[in-house]
Length: 130
Image 1 (spheres, helix red, strand yellow):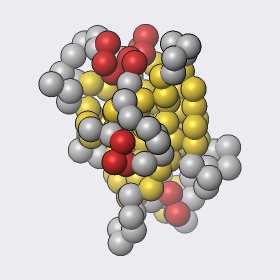
Image 2 (cartoon, helix red, strand yellow):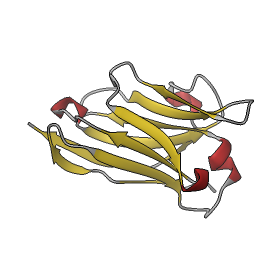
Image 3 (cartoon, one colour):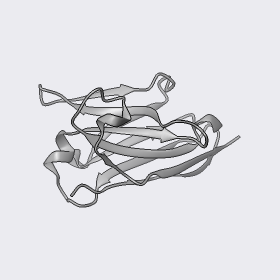
Image 4 (cartoon, helix red, strand yellow):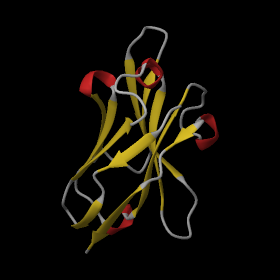
């Protein structure tokens, strides 16, 4: 049973940075998690869930990174802890980044679509004040 848990959210000022982390709390080391596409989505109040970034596993057995169009180089997704965690480093935060951030894991594509993911965390709140 995959149990995704996000951590690292909080309240910050505009221009600050945060690092979110996602791990499978149900397994210390998970082959599924290491080889799944793991993505971050976010949902602001009154808005639809939005793709933020994905770390994908491909046929070459390597990880690739993809980002939502709004990121403009401010966010970085990376695998950590020997692939057992996926971090999202967020820099130059603005109030528009305020949302609940969700981690998701799955094996289907397209990876930027929420319906491609079977496993979701509960979300972590990010609040950015001006």
